[in-house]
Image (cartoon, rainbow, N blue to C red; front, side, top):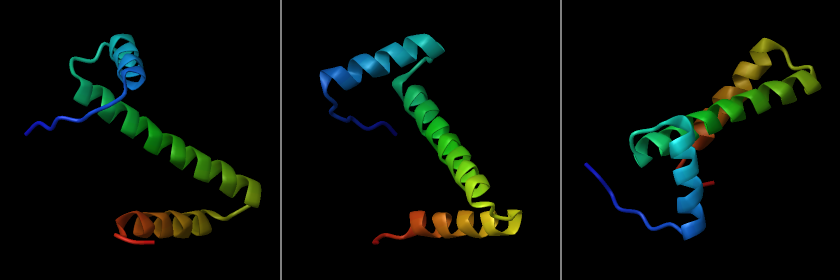
Length: 76
């Protein structure tokens, strides 16, 4: 199933640049690439913060669990 979305010209130009750079076949592939990399970045950020806070591996897992639960909520 496909969906149509509206984006600004500037966003389209950047998506096109990324599409060309990663040699993606579709814009869906570009968007999934960006989402996956964003999620990886967030995990790296959490790990960096946990290192700064000197959290144990167990505490890091608890933080990840809380974040996962927050993502699943429909409200804040």
